[in-house]
Length: 74
Image (cartoon, rainbow, N blue to C red; front, side, top):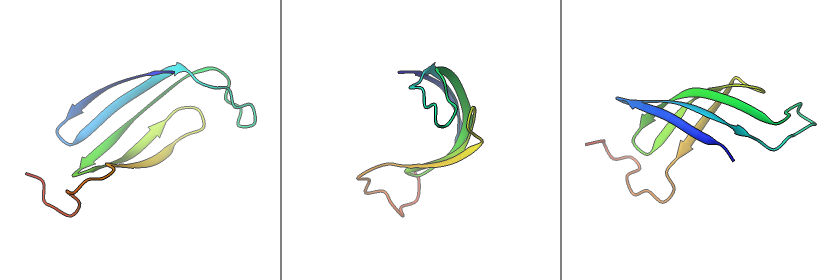
């Protein structure tokens, strides 16, 4: 469980995730943590970076089942 707070400004999504996460002792994670980052929104995809314990990390999120792939944004 956790909460995500964020702000969209144009094509950039700035976010912060906080909460008690499942401890993964093999990776050194223990309990409540906080992560933050930014993602650029392009059509049906967001890509960006995350900072926090075990990071910096990069990610890419895609909308599932979208028919807008390859179409120009309106």
